Length: 248
Image 1 (cartoon, rainbow, N blue to C red):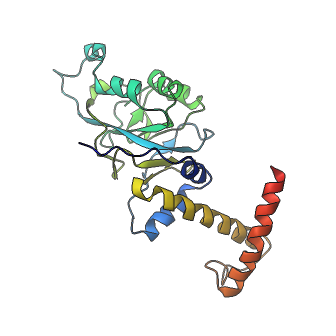
Image 2: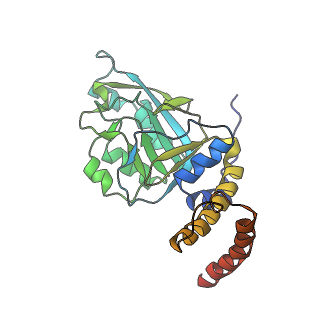
């Protein structure tokens, strides 16, 4: 029996939403994880909100002509259709298309349905059809590229909520999926809380560094910081936090 995961903590989700994919990949690298960024995927709508949610997975294998025809969509147990209607709110549908974008893995109707059901986003290492319509949605969606043909031409939906590969990265159900304008990062679930806290701290420090670089400071001794800069930052951080609090 699979161990039921505790829901992602609201504080963890909030902290991650304030971070960037660059910061998160650095934090994961510090913990020995090198292959966490889904290379080649881009947001369909770059203006969509930052994506943070737990992975709900769908695996495709190559289609076969006697099994994949339009009639299969009448079956309510069809894995693609079932995924759309069963993905829990706050989760991200992650699809393994083997990097094959010759046919779509979903289209605007299915994406819209998941958005209305409260999903946190959709990620595929294949293509999506109706991409102009998806681009108009305020919903985080990531793909390798647009692809008009129906999924049945090249993809056979076979498994739900099992470990998959997406863009060459292992994704396990419940992993935390993050997406911003730069791309998508997979965070192992057991590391999510600590990564969120350390990433938020890194973001604050890099905000300080950026401010000093704009003032004309050299990066030597600043980034990474030596003791004098650490002392300067220690004084800067409380002041900035107080200023931010006053603006709310």
